[in-house]
Length: 140
Image 1 (cartoon, rainbow, N blue to C red):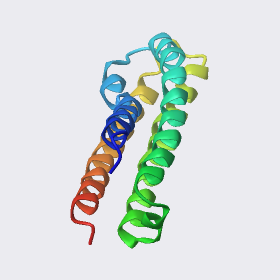
Image 2 (image 1 turned 180 degrees about the vertical axis):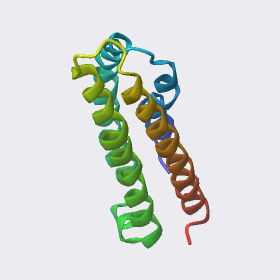
Image 3 (image 1 turned 45 degrees about the vertical axis):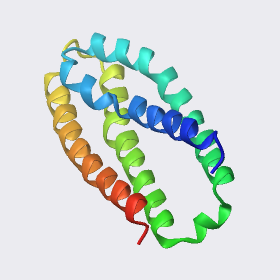
């Protein structure tokens, strides 16, 4: 295992945490203006995290072996990982954009729906990331 493996994992996990930080911000959003401000700050962070995830993911495979992609546990882990980020993208990011583009001042009903989506996607993410962690530790 090359010396670069551990730093790659740390950066990779840091990018995952940066993307998932949205779960902690959504409950504090209470108006359309705050949603707009959050989106403007978060969009560059999210894009950077996406690039970092792709680059570090490829780096991790290069450090280990591309043959890891032939193992079922790795394919399942990657699939679950994609589900988490698609859920965040479609249930939270799209809802945030809808609220930001609305003509309303407070959008209380939409913010309530956003918070509910946040809890649902958050719980789903914790469960799926737990399964991913289990698969990566046990490599069944």
